Amino acid sequence: MMTTTIPPGFDKALALKLANASLLAYTQFTDPAQFTMEPGYTLVAEFEADVLGNTEPFGYLAKSATDAVLAFRGTDDFPDAIADIRYNQATYPYDANAGMSHVGFTTVYDSTRTAVQAAVAALPAGITLYITGHSLGGGVATLAALDIAANTSFTSPIIYTIASPRVGDPDFATRFDSGLVTAQTRSWRVVNMYDLVPLLPPKDIFDLLDVKTYYYTHVTNDLLLAFFKGGAIDNHDLSNYIEAIGQLS
Image (cartoon, rainbow, N blue to C red; front, side, top):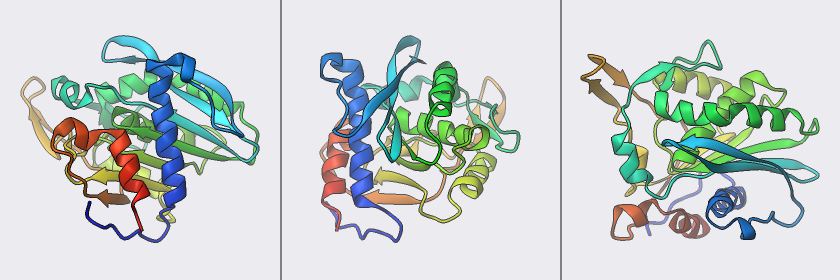
């Protein structure tokens, strides 16, 4: 793996903590009997979402005495499944100034939004809220973070996403960045340069059905990794991301 210099404001220990929280969201789905919180944390709520036509466990909220973690998972076949989703956009529905977002990803978040908002609203005041997710879960975490910042008392969540796709147009990215990344340390996208998923949707794509071009822009602050494991699935795998984050110096 290419050595990556940790930029100012990036917290390696926090990145590992939140990456493992995202990994636990996969356990929630694949092996519920092993879905247990880290020491010091209690489970606040579990969330289901409509993921590519299936209603299934998709994330959770846990809290300690000082902070809470909202984590979302991806899907095992997301690198393939994302190619089958139309890249059309609609107005981001939770902030009037946030432009357009990907309809498919926003639909996934919307299917779990009521439960997420209620759980976040019930958290004690004054604790820090972390939001994280891998792959599709990273995209949903980005959509959720702006919604939470705009519509709850947790106006300054800290976001670390891993292998997230693009989720919105330039206006969405501008609104997210101005509202959530003002100090350049509160939101980070961890990206493997050999991972295809963060390259999707393309920056611009002409939709033949809508007869228009959609434009996509990543939110800012990326931490670039460079590990090559020999194939698209392994280059996107969360466990390999965790290994690479652990090797940062």
